[in-house]
Length: 116
Ligand code: HEC
Image (cartoon, rainbow, N blue to C red):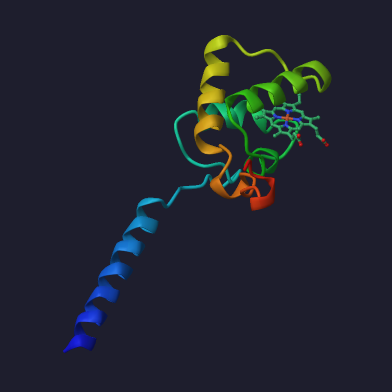
């Protein structure tokens, strides 16, 4: 009887976990591998001309990091200027879909480095 109860709990947890992972499932563009979301077409048009979209999909950054990368390409790599509306669409997309992940945050400081 006790075992039965445990089994039910285990199945319940499993179902809960799998429903979470399904909810998180993303769609990827077949051609480029970019995450399908609003703004993707604009990014695809403007950002896969000189290099593969892998440059983007392997990169993570907050809005400022992405903007810095765009400015760097504009200053040194011949990337054209965007009108503010286009730039906003691109940054919205990148910030939302390619933000730094939890796992890329630095690990916690070891105890001896913490203040007393
Ligand atoms: C005019 C050509 C051009 C366009 C258009 C372009 N890039 Fe780049 N990008 C480059 C070059 C050149 C590099 C450097 C490649 C290398 O390091 O070999 C680069 C590198 C990158 C990198 C890697 C930076 C790093 O630190 O490793 C990312 C990310 C990137 N581009 C994103 C984008 C995004 C987002 C867009 C659209 C807004 C874009 N690129 C459009 C030319 C371009």
